[in-house]
Image: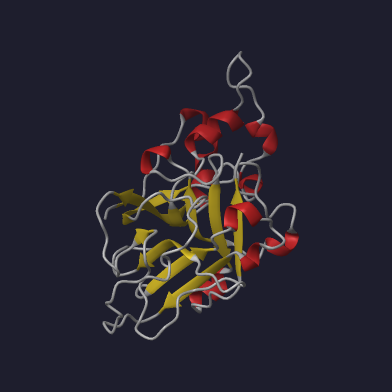
Length: 264
């Protein structure tokens, strides 16, 4: 784990350097590795930490959901608003990709948080995923997650960009070929990383722009992006995001979450 409060400032944005610096927030970048994780570690896919006598997460049809990611806060240094201990898990339904719409998203995912970790586990070989359908599951194999702290300015697709940088400034041409300052901003501050906290990445536009009722989901709880080299692919180079209200995160209340998935 490492941290850095610096980021590359393109020369073109030096006139608004102070404004950009005022938008800086902390994020934790998560990097998958080929190391085989154990049951308690931060990871993608595989079998989750599951205390003895506790049931697996099931969908509305009684089918087991698939572990997308598990975060053990003993493994990672998370942004200050996140837990400092315990395990947070993200699950999606086996049919999530085929059936996903924003309207029915709530039935296709689950988030589970264990504030304390017990050693009283069922150590027998799990079998509840024996017949599970992984056809469109985005992660091809279980991977250990390592982390580092990063500080970033508002991302190119976050709706708050307009609060910091005037759209007329971004529309200025940068080259005779028609490239604008907005294009340059995309190159530097896209925020297309696996991460918790910080600013999100959207393929199209921030989903919260068209849905003012979503403004309350002001904190990026977890983001997973497609990456061929890491054997992670959601549809056609898509992204999966979970958002939460900052106050609810402080209270460790994970019952009201916005789950958003998109691809090209």
